[in-house]
Every structure is written in structure tokens, then in C-alpha cells.
Amino acid sequence: MKVLVAVKRVVDYNIKVRIKPDGSDVDINGVNMGVNPFDENAIEAALRLKEQGIATEIVAVSLGTSANQDVLRHALAMGADRAILVESDLTLQALGVAKLLKAVVLREQPQLIILGKQAIDDDAGQTGQMLAALLNYPQATFASAIQVDGNTISVTREVDGGTETLALNLPAVVTADLRLNEPRFVKLPNLMMARKKPIETIDAAEFAVNAEPRLKLIKVSEPSARKAGIKVGSVSELLSKLREHQGIKL
Ligand code: AMP
Image (cartoon, rainbow, N blue to C red; front, side, top):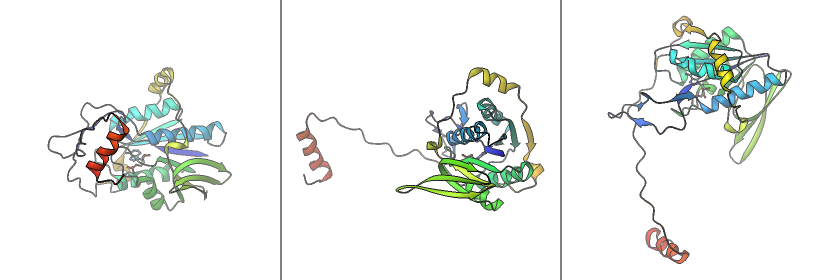
């Protein structure tokens, strides 16, 4: 079974992002970038399916500029077999990405497509759902456990107040939640080896889909600053402060 994994290049999750002075966007100039954390869970899930003898080939796909080669190399270092870069200078949004991924899926014919549940840069959380709709494939989002059994996959999802388990016919689209697994650590020798592996590059224009942005980003602003906290010396002082400031009857 071939598994396709979508890997987005985003600002490193450890970094506190800056906003451009004109508020037009987040400033990513000179900022450390890396694999979207949920996509690492997606890669890990695919690797475990391969280790179970279920997946035979794992193909990592990233859409963006040639800079995205670094996240594909990370996927290769984790253990992906092949990497495809769909190159585009457009500002890619969820629908554009979903249309381009659909074109890759039609070409590669994977049985399972795993994406992250959301990208931590724009928090859209839409691409997997849009891709499944465009392909008319079944989908299971926010997966915290998966199990492939012949031609079906059972997916446990995190929902309000608990979990639910769905059975989907393959081919299907699954989006990964953090609880799905703990992604393996990439060892340096594997990173070095991944540098030598080829990355297939496809010009997005070849797919002849309209991936132009459909949403306009109007303004980005900092969250409002939190007021400084205070330290209290005793429980009775705490209670009196709460009475005073919050109007709480205690
Ligand atoms: P989003 O809908 O933007 O929150 O992204 C959800 C998931 O879609 C991500 O976790 C990735 O797996 C995939 N995705 C989004 N954008 C890209 C991209 N440019 N390249 C590869 N995968 C992407």
C-alpha cells in the first residue's frame, strides 16, 4: 500500500513570531523554519504502517518554493522513501493546496493520504477536509489512533467529551492529531544520508489547476498584552483581593 504524506514548512514552533511593522503579515525573514508538528505525526504514522508490513512506500509531498526542500529532507531522514516538491511562488492557501494535492494523488494513486490536522502558522485546519471532498474520498480528521485492516482503516478521533472510532474504505484521507504518536528523533547520519536522496520537483503550473489565493489577509495584530500579575502573602489576602477585584462573594 502506498501512503502519501503532506508536509508543510512553517515557522519553528519554538519561535515567538514577529509581525511586520505595517501589520500586513507575520515576518518570517531570517526565522527558523521546520516541519509542521502535526505533519511529523503524519510521517510517523506512515512509518509505523511500513514497519507493520502494511505500507510499502511512503511519499512525502510539500508545496511551496525551493526552500521547502529542507522539510522534505527531514521527512526522508525520518524514513520516507520518496519526496515530491510541488513548486509554486503563489501564496498557497488551503483550497489551492488541496487542489494541487489532488493532482498529486491522481498521479501517485496512494491508498492512504495522511495530513496534519492543521498547520500551526495559519491554523486553517481545512486542507485535509477539502482534499477529501475534491477527491470524493472518505475522511477521518483529528486521528489519535489508526489501524489498517485489509481494505479498510479504522480511525479513532478526538471529539468533544471523548473519542469515536470510524471505519473507512480505502483510499481515504486522514488528518493526524498530536496524540496519534510520538515522532521519532532524526539522527544526524540519517539527515546526512537524506541530503543525497533525490527530490522530484514538479512545477505547479504543470497541473493546470487554479491555486490562486481566494482569501485576502487584511491585518495581523499582536494579542493584547496581559496585565502584570501580583503576588499575595496568604490565603486570606488572596480571598480579600478576589473580593475586591472580581466582586466574588466568598
Ligand atoms: P491547514 O489546512 O493549512 O491547517 O493544513 C493542514 C495540513 O495540510 C497540514 O498539516 C499539512 O499536512 C497539509 N498542508 C497544508 N499546506 C501545505 C503545503 N504547502 N505543503 C504540504 N502540505 C500542506
